Amino acid sequence: AIVSVILVGSLSGSAIREAFLILIDMTLILTFIPLLYLFAALPVLRKRAAGDEHGITRIPGGPLGLWLASGLGFATTLLAIVTSLVPPEHTSQPGLFFLKVGGGCFLLIAVGLVFYARGRRHLESDSRS
Image (cartoon, rainbow, N blue to C red):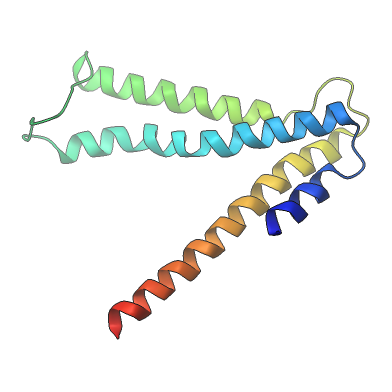
């Protein structure tokens, strides 16, 4: 129900094409955020696993190849997220488009964080009793 309210709010006053683009851009952003975490975690996890080679596939090129692959992947994903916030050329109100895409993503992430915090608090209270 909460997500439906957010989506209706983000799509109100939009033409069908613009509403479709808003939903596509929000989907892209929300899908690519976890990829940022993956690319950022790659060098950290590789460093933690130093010496334990069991089950690890190394990236060719040594540490330089690792940082290059991780950095380029992160930069490309971040570029895709940023360009998703740019309104299309024939948008009647570019600021409103940006606000709907960015605000809709922010609200959906906030709702997810609220559910996460409530669930975590519930698990902690169960483990204490």
